[in-house]
Image (cartoon, rainbow, N blue to C red; front, side):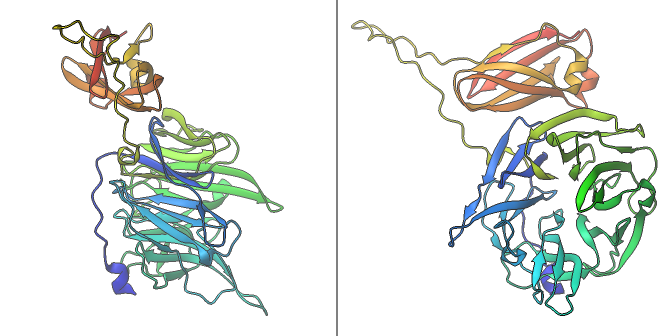
Length: 438
């Protein structure tokens, strides 16, 4: 089993981009972090018994590989199935999400994550045995992301798992976050890392950015079998060698119960679900509470859950753009004459009365009118140097909103008084406007 788990699958490297995978209405979706481009990866599946199996959880790797789990609602988890999507949009790997057996009732995944290379996955379980007496078991399963029928490794007592590299982060009880000893791959040696009892909340799941400098903790409180509190704390850390630094220590602003947190690989974006839907925002940089977010929350999906930010680009999953519309000549040309040229509609850009550098830093929505469906790309330059941009996909002819934003380097060039050139492109047709930044 250890030899099997040490075998790494060949996974194509993803482009330097970020996207968020999520579940909505039993379907698997992936979206850009600004919500401008979305694609459905999978609809619910009707099995041979006529039952509709819904997708329950999804995880995206740092390299862009996406893994999702489905089952018929309420059925024993032993019938679960998983499927994989590669960063280039293809899908060739799927199989049963199994368990070692020996239990009467199995419930999983309770926490679901995949290693940075997409080769292994972890999922929490809560099982009960046969009578009498009834035995119980909780912990984490680890298995390769392949169609192998071999049962997973069971790590007993470590619940709600996530991954930092190949190390499992879990909870050993309601207030203690533990970290797996790296000496033994997927072994059962764990060390306590954080005690969150001072918050008065029970810890659920923890996510740590691949950069190792930001952690997000899900806290909750229950009363009479009903969850009454759900909060997400964001902390600045220096890996697992010491406790939080204190530079960032706050709760995310949320509506209702907050859950399903995910941090981007660079620690600059955070996704979560609350009463307002699945949101993505910029991570805080101070200890002000509630968190002062570096960019405001964007609602990706009103009913979205199971957020997982990965390193892949949403573009390979988008449907191909249709051919641009062509307007035929109104009448035949006179004998011996030349046919009038065919006209292709150009995109039209409507600018706000004032375009400010401050608005571009936070993200400025632009209205673009197009003559057909397809991807719309906006590039902004100052003095011939690219300073930012954005993109969106028009589903039909008409107006589409493209949210444009300055890059980190662009913030230094795009200042008040500078001339900003905005170029809009769709299907080879362009329009350019120049404005003076206010």
